[in-house]
Image 1 (cartoon, rainbow, N blue to C red):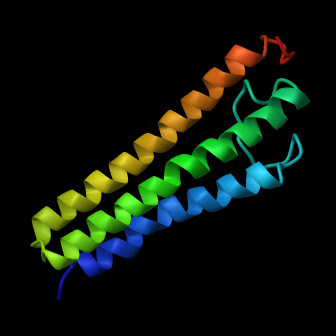
Image 2: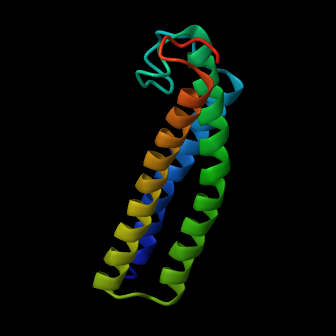
Amino acid sequence: MNINILYLPAELILPIAVIMVGVSVWKNPPKMGEQFGFRTKRSQRSEAAWNYAQIAYGKMSTFVFIPIELLTLAVGVTSIVMNFSDLPAFITFMAVEAAQVAALIIITFAVDLRLKKHFDEDGNLR
């Protein structure tokens, strides 16, 4: 059995989840204080900062993770077609997952930097 067939669905879970959350907070931002949403110290300083962070995170995660989803699919299909053996398949899987997690971390820092640029330490617009 080609192990890559098992890796592909696992690789696709994170991008799909991030896109779904991104669209959700972008189109229907959660209210401040709810357990759901982009929750950093900077985003929770004011209602305006909170709303800005939800929309910024939603847009950024959606627009970044749609291409990541397509690239993940391309890499997964390529590894299936080329029938990578167990070790190369696992290494490919781990590299794809690491890139996805790195993208999440970068998006978090990018949204926080935007908040820092547009809001002061008390959460007021600059």
